[in-house]
Length: 608
Image (cartoon, rainbow, N blue to C red):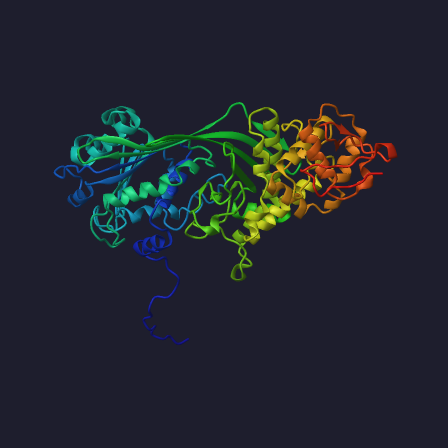
């Protein structure tokens, strides 16, 4: 068998890109701005933290006593992110992973992609983490701790490391100061005695010059803008998180003066905990109070309903939930205190609000949150488009809003009615909750959702219409008497309402949007009971109502005459006379009268 000299070949095969290149790609996809803070909040929520604090520190620290000379340029202004949960071994492993996330297999964790954390490199070139038993510094440029070394980690279990952490004053003074500020703990005790920090503190020194990672020099002004972009959504930031109850923004000026720019807190009412299970979905409704303290204090109350579809109801959802490690759950939040709901504000959330742009606005009166599959930059939800008909994340999202969202919507309406009846919610909350067709007609996807919700609301014959005689009592559409919707004056409508309520008629009150929804969506609108001249004449004839005011009699007369069915006036005591009294319409000759009334000049008739 002959042998041949092998020719030297160039390397071939798929290889992972260098870390720096990968990091640059992440920064291209993840925009600079308030999204960075949201990623850090999501990671804290995943870790089970209840408190998050962001600190913009403009101080500069000493550079004489450092672990490495090249660390001097990172002793200046920095952004800190603190939360009160500790890193686990898996967290230390995960934060070093570039292209994957140890969270991917856990559907209860929001930051599924792991890539989001690396958006902090818009701000810094050196990330430091102090948590549990370690303090680590990550150097993606591999310039500080030696060749091919991407960082260094000190262990509180090692005596030499503990000595370095307590004696190298300049190097670790930033951590000493901030640990004391956020936790009230002394550095020496944490390091030497406890040998454990019960929390997590990130330090991101602001980039002061262009680097291999980014040419984005990060000034203190940019941090202010970063905080401002978060403040715009601060009120919504805690609505759907599972654990985080408080987020604060703190500023420390160059002289060390500390001021809190904002604190937002979430509390859940212990009085409202409505659980439901219909064999398909498991629901929970609560009331959350969001308190925002900044230059002015503001408090808002939200009705929040969560529904999770149980396994075995929709095969495709079950399959995708298992494959993608998502939960088939949708949450809806509705502002309880608003007299008038502004549907233009409501938008989509994936545990934190998605960017405030048109593609994330629904036109519904509720904020919609779910385990949505997002685009790579986590700014938009994936939908089924021509070029991604087989994208499983897009299919998942479509299934969620088709199968789970309508059921969640019906649950929040049902539970809101219970809370109205218990005097916890305002009566107008119920109609404000209904999808308003006029607000979604230009948004095809959300128009379909609104129509689906309304169709199910009607087909299930739920008692959702408020009675005129007691607005906190509700009846079904089939049992209701709908108010007249023609060109009628408010005085006439009020008179009709008073007379029908006194006759114990199931008259309901409707907002304009609800009346429009019933007319546009109910499949057999003409079969419903309506207040018409004929209906009112019959009620007046069959119901012995006394003490009707003269003004009401005149208003009722105008309405019952409006269809010109004069022969049906027989027996109605609505005929005004010149002496101010009223008598009944009859067909007896001796009762013949002439009507001469300035308010009814067109009704000059001779009744025989």
